[in-house]
Amino acid sequence: MSTRCGLVAVIGAPNAGKSTLVNALVGQKVAITSAKAQTTRARLLGIAIADEVQIILADTPGIFAPKRRLDRAMVAAAWEGAHEADAILLVVDPIKLRRSELDPLLETLKNRPERKLLVINKVDASAKEPLLVLAEELGSRGEFEETYFVSALTGDGVPELKAQLAARMPEGPWHYPEDQVSDASERLLACEVTREQLFRQLHDELPYDSAVRPESYTQRKDGSVEIRQQIVIARESQKAIVLGKRGARIKQIGEEARKELAAILGQTVHLFLHVKVEEGWAEGRDIYEDIGLDWVK
Image (tube, rainbow, N blue to C red):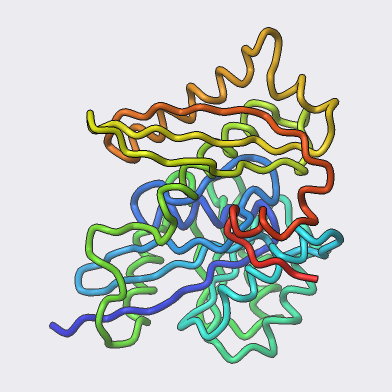
């Protein structure tokens, strides 16, 4: 049997469940998730295998109306992920439709040449009838080849979606080794895992103006890895939030990130975090390379 390989862009409004769906299709965690919108910043490739088919999934930031430089870079990364894809998956949250982002997205997709598939996510949390009505409405507004109903969280409908994606991939050699599940470097992955813990543990206490910057990633002779990272925040007043009382919060963030990284990397991890206040960090070119985004004007 000849091999097949293709690129699928996974796009949608913020918090539609794109990263959770990519993780479900790959079969393991490659993208961070949280209940907060705009968790994904850079375009990340997840690599799924279905028999002789390799499906390269571009997990993209949510597409929204950008206001800041960081926002513009995230939206640019999303559309870059869709460029010349073999298929575009529009993932929709039927509960929080976010019409202000979804409607312009549907209009833009009309003029794109790629084949488009509609994925209505979170079916485990919605009644059937409203889902069918929504599918009919969105289907009439976009040139979608097919509509799929899935729950990325529970896995319902995901195998069927994966099989249909595999059938649409063109013949060609695989682009990545069989055991590779992502194109993210271990340094970037480590930063993303720490950033996920920032979102999960600080909730609404810390705004989006924070980032995790890699400092060093060193393999020790004993087979363990030493990782040093910088948590960058925009204001001095946020420092106490990240540190917590007597440093308890940053210790907990580091411990949870360390345990997850050890499981992902399959080796002992020594993780060292410190907080740096850097006003206007989102305007500097250097941080964009660190977090995997292109600097935009």
